[in-house]
Image (cartoon, rainbow, N blue to C red; front, top):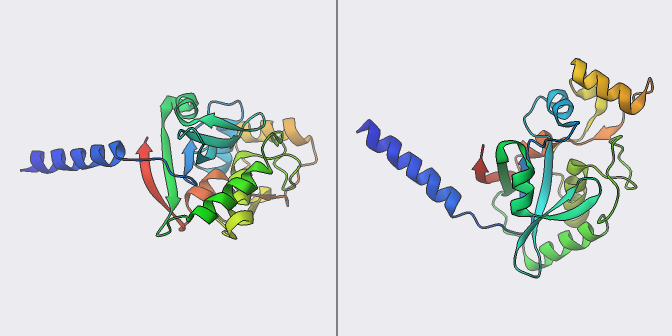
Amino acid sequence: MRFVILFMLSLASFISIASYKPQDGDIIFQSSQSRQSLAVEQATNSPYSHMGIIFIKNNGKPYVFEAANKVVYTPLNSWIARGKNKNYIIKRLKNHNLSHSEIAKLKQVASSFEGKPYDIWFGWDNNYIYCSELIWKIYNKALKLKIGQLQTIKDFNLSSPVVKKKLKERYGNKIPYQETVISPVSIFNSPLLTTVDKQW
């Protein structure tokens, strides 16, 4: 009987993953293999160091709009393949189906960030953009939603040697502890979101 129950649970999980269909506005998380990934994960005490927002382009295919070297569209499959062990988790707004006008607003705001360079200093202005900042600002500017709790750099775990080395590399002796920041895990933990697909 126990075997049957476990099998049914496994089958249900398989069906859930197999039936996932990307939707505009879905938010995807991964552990990236970038040079700063480990520092981000240790500073934020989470396995998520990169994220993006999914949009369906005119060709009907899903792309991840992300802040990488610059803000670009990346095919969803390519984005997943680039992550550590190809693991990912996808979330979307809980109990809220985006309307056509809301999707249009998200895409319009997203277009204002396209091509902007990546922000290695994690500043809060719009001249340079990092991954979680991009998603937070798109949803906030388009739909007035605050997905994830804003923090400051001093709120993170800055004690590990990896994090200290990265801070020294980026800021020297002038670390902007009061700078407003948003982390991938803060967005991940937002009560406004629910998980719709997972391979982790």
